[in-house]
Image (cartoon, rainbow, N blue to C red; front, side):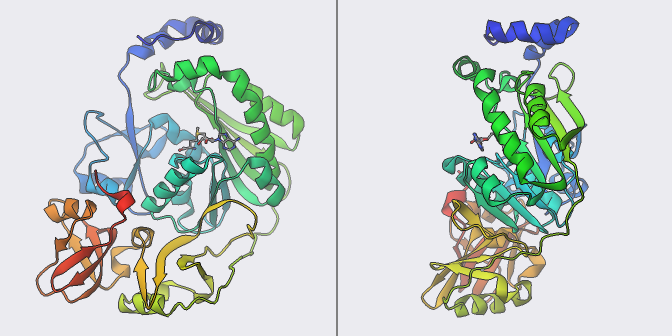
Length: 434
Ligand SMILES: C[S@@+](CC[C@H](N)C(=O)[O-])C[C@H]1O[C@@H](n2cnc3c(N)ncnc32)[C@H](O)[C@@H]1O
């Protein structure tokens, strides 16, 4: 049994009344493990077929499944191909609740490490714009990896304080998600060490932070826009209390629906989500495309994509070179000068002297049929793991020299350069299978 703080227990008893004993018993239940399928790459049905897994669905998200925690689903080529994200089942609720539509401009305000951003990106289907922000630079870097792993091309990753964003992008977003920092009461079962953190910084510490972020979120939202506020805590001060504060100070906001997940009622940890709407008529969609042009020579990139028969994928006016790194900007992009940028657009690779080195993110956002030279390995082929471990592998008989898109079961993992039957590995070292 976890040693729960008495003050926490007293508050829960007050909140739950008759259900208090059931709530306490939930701490003896086994933990739930979940994965969420990446629909940018595969449908849930096809994932189950391809993996051969018989997984129980998560009731509140059709893309989510429970799995047996004694098995490591991260040690799987399909995970490395970005086909799913490992996510606690209750945490699948907030992004699912936000009604994102194709073409929307979406902000994920507290995004790292990317559980909700990857879900929002999948909903956008690489249309519109996904701005994923986290105030912590180190956490924003983990977020970047997950965005790239998923094959999301239309993102702007920032690391800023929400008040700064509100100053730069007033009423710019169609949808905003605030998965706020909180006292984490709903995670005590998953991470018992969080009880000590709660004693140091509990609801009284997080409440004012949440209230400030919520006001900024409302100011960032277009009239007619929608916002989800979520926490993984039970505290009424942090949940309903923060929402009440928002409604009082931003009367144009109203509650559409509320969902509370209790661990004694569902197979998942504690979570609170509320969907809010801002009054007013939605303005015409933004057409702004900020693409700072540079004088760098892009010939090596054009040669590279021509050799792969992939030139048509790119509108040259959206190719942006920044000190030798090449990005493809989304169709919609606001001017972001002065903000701390972790990533702008789809990172394609490095322009070296007379040659181009493709990135892992480039490969991940392609489909197998978008590149002419493919080394497609079956899931059982030992070369898959060798490739993911950044080792040199052999190609297939008769494969000519050049850049190959290495795939597992048809899903891109990364690039490699074939030379006389041997493939030089270009898988990013930071993504290496350990
Ligand atoms: C609950 S976590 C977010 C989890 C994330 N949404 C996911 O699904 O992977 C809360 C995040 O808020 C960030 N954070 C803390 N204070 C913040 C602030 N004042 N503004 C923006 N983000 C903040 C933390 O760095 C942390 O990554």
